[in-house]
Image (cartoon, rainbow, N blue to C red; front, side):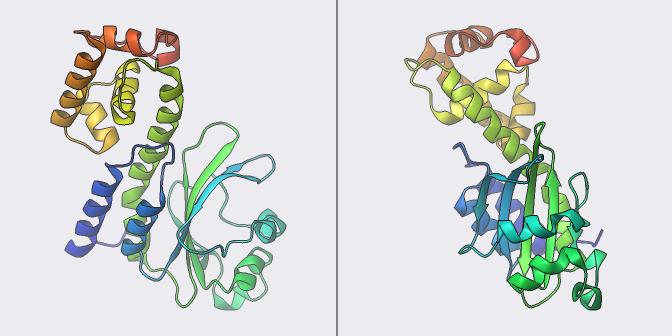
Length: 249
């Protein structure tokens, strides 16, 4: 892995700061794609979630105007060397150089779209789904620095998706009379899954002190005094089995 400089590390920290503010149902809203764009200049960025049985898009987001042709990709995907399961970011230029790209079956959609190189990372996904982030460049190839930055970001991107899953699960589950914010519900949903304040802080890219403040607000809004009581009040149908662990005070 290429050694990253101070500017790269500062850029990663800035991106993670933006990630800490994400609290809606989408893992990577447009402003976060813009933040990634600052880490990978001259790149068009797409995240997507595919149904593995059909290769159909379930959800996706784009940093620019539409340039990605799903039907063209599906036509060539059978020969795609970057399959779900790679734990490290992959460049298409790793698998076929400029000369081979002129005739390789999997490169047909790259040629048609005018893409010079793509950097791709698969993320841990629910059963039957495949989540990924793709960066495309049209005038030059990606370098090892780019792969290193994406490798550092991969676990944080995974958390973004898992947290979005959690928000989509716990927000409809919660009672409507508690008046909790989306972020408070997110924190409480992690409490229901047995997470400590330190673990929640790491998952949400915030400080343990901020977690404690959110929990203080939860206690006040729900008029309770323990973590277990807050979980029971906010999620009346959420039992220990669904949570994975019994909440503790």
